[in-house]
Length: 607
Image 1 (cartoon, helix red, strand yellow):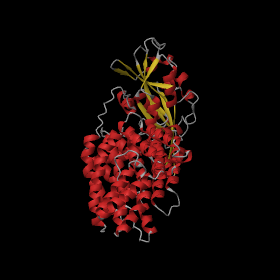
Image 2 (cartoon, helix red, strand yellow; image 1 turned 90 degrees about the vertical axis):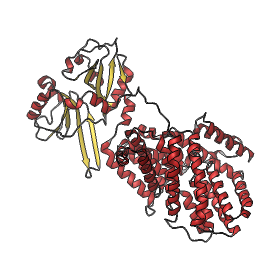
Image 3 (cartoon, helix red, strand yellow; image 1 turned 30 degrees about the vertical axis):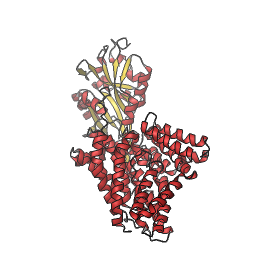
Image 4 (tube, one colour; image 1 turned 90 degrees about the horizontal axis):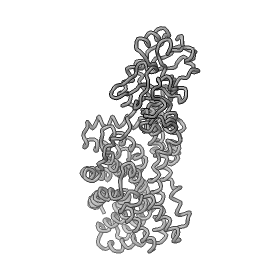
């Protein structure tokens, strides 16, 4: 018991100091418990196979799919418009919407669903995401108190009542309690988040330009036109070499795109390719032409092409980047057509920036100079390749990272369907699928259906620090239980406060549960404390409902620690939070919530 308490105390101290990463501290504590013989290796590693941890991994991937397909951006823009630029309105909208979702979906699922939306929203509104991510996590726990299925501790106390011969709780028995929790949370969190969660990130002046910024800067939309190739077009079935557009019309084909749609547009596929001399243009393709407008118009009329009204630049498979010609480059003095960019690297040059002027006309005959900035277009893997293979130029920005930020908008309806199916499986009991299975299936579907760019992109969405932190801390509950520490604390509390009356006992149960949840999972704490609360109520001869509600509230309303609930851990990395941030905001909220609930519970459920 002594070793367990010392290990727990040292772990808490290291979390507060913050010198080591939280996951490393948790792993050190876990290793100590194994080496001291308190936990067997199987017990220590059980957290890594826990369904909650597996669910967190899957939800990161689902959230990545929501982000990658643009669903998060679309939802965030709507919230920003509703907020009208007001920080207060944005805060209230995020907290309220999160709580409503959390009433029907697990708080872990709610945060994974809302987190990419909030990150996208704050980027859109040029706000600090850290101001909203922690309130988001706390609001998901508060929303969980609105319904029976909102959070596991609710189900634990319902089961305890039934085991002891009482009527179970109805679906909305928790609604009055949850509504009060949400009101208290909003009142307390709003000033605290403004005081303590402003990270003050410095603006990164060295960041690379976005794709949209490059398109606007080089005015690409003015010199490039998209056309649809119909069945009766004279160029359908011909190769690029046969057309020889550069020699005949002074036109360049920048991109050939093919779009297919099935099931009323729900499943769409878009393929983009840079033309080679052997590329064949098929009926149904969309081609992007660059050149003089009059030349393009003449050719389009001759070839019977239909101009696309709204078809701007998209960067799904193909991207753009800037490269700087170095002073000692072999390219200096060469005409652009002699550079052989397309032949050697399968990339196009769309424009040249020289001093403060931009050159986009008659590019093949333009001689390159040292310091020229070339806007190049190619498949993302080719842009990344030239970043590593050549010393004649310097690639500005990081094409690989830019590719990961590209929104696959045409996959948004499919991502929405996958997300809706996952939520339905988690909400409705008549669907015979366990929540963890639903999340795993949804994560796999996001990858298989192309809502994420690649398997590697899916792995990158997972915040492994949070996963390891939760998985490594879960066995601490086993250690506390095996050594009798938890039972000793709980029984001592009942013996000390039982004679002081039911209100004192209620207060003791609430804050003991709250204290334990800071170090072990809320579900484990509820399982441990619910029988003790029931026996304590029986001993003093009072209604067990307020005592059991104290357990579920104490277990769920734990905000002062990043690992007490999965939602707290989920936002830790994205919000750039430290352990001390949870203490500054979460601890006052946790204490105020406890005081309010100690007063309110006997009023709602008389002794």
